[in-house]
Figure 1: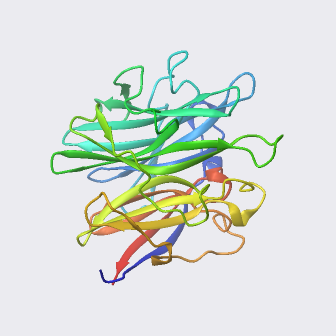
Figure 2: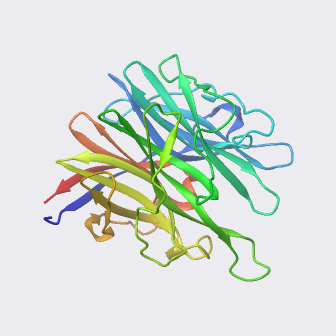
Length: 324
């Protein structure tokens, strides 16, 4: 296959949560931006954070709505798009990320639900919600998840991205392979990989049962937020990846963007060197690029992503060019 290049032309930071009044006293973070495209708007759903009475973060899904050129912020949602989860549910302690998928006149919201643990920091599963008002609000399809841990994917099933091809729904997601410690007394860190599942009804999913993206760092490389776009006969995936340890203290070990392509949605070739972009020292995304989302508006391809500190200061936009 002829080699190609995927070039990102950065447009810049387009949303800073600290500059706006968000519902539920959310005061920081606009993580994992995900789009719903309308006739005259691009609605970007993201996870922002409030704190509960003990001081723990709770992630809520809200949205910011832009015009089609992203030159104007039209409005911000007045409430979270989902009601709080039930006591003990898989998403009791927050939702991050929230992937939106439209089919005909129905909008579906895939929930990455977070619940806190005692021995490790978190567990997660994927649930489904449905909107009957065009994506303003969503109602859970049920209290439980549609995709969760299993015999060979034992932890942290999350980060869904869904695409329908012919009569089959394809979901790319991540699962936790193991929890590890750098030293005996260090806190546990998770290792997670990208996987693939299919469904005929968005409720019952068949896992492929394997990691689909090769490692570039080492066997403990952490891969997150796969997002897929079809262009010129190829499926293009952008994701983010990082080292398992030291990623908060050492900027060189934090999240950066990776790239893979496929002709059949099953077999993926990873080549991060095909993804080309520039970083500006000292800027909001100089130290980290993470949680990407590919989408199309008209004839233009775009990528939304978070910058430094895992999206604390919002998200930015780049135009995507596929070049031979």
